[in-house]
Length: 187
Image 1 (cartoon, rainbow, N blue to C red):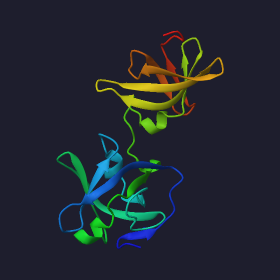
Image 2: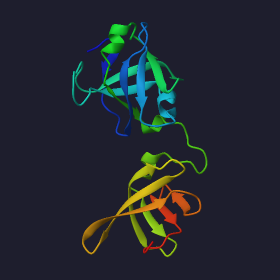
Image 3: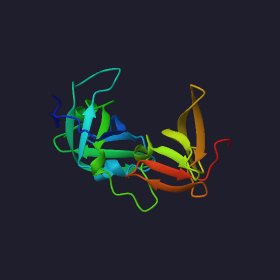
Image 4: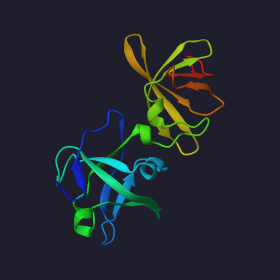
């Protein structure tokens, strides 16, 4: 096992939030490519779980836990350092590792803010209680986010998109795993 890593099990609520790009400096810091434009989960968690890169050079096997000392924004990227990763060579050995964080360690979202991962799989219904589909993914189009849903019609899997904005979204009920929208089946 690489210095600074200890064997671990991936938490049941683990979410992939980024990957380690490369070493940064000579004191064990490394660059992180965040999968979110607001990488708060990286900053709030002091335990990252790593899986080796899916392709390319694998410098470790299985799941490893990395104890993070500090993570911060630097220019257009995130940089971090970990306990026991003390030099550039140790940081380079982490290159390509996939970073997972336990969902339970994410910061609490503000009112009317949601983590995309929490919306995936929710059932969407309109005001008439007609099923609009199940959220498969979300797309960022710049000015707004769009819900992408799958639904069945005439035995075929179809796709529907609805802007995830207050003009169309009446309610998100995470406990009931439902979203209610002001949208018609024929839009």
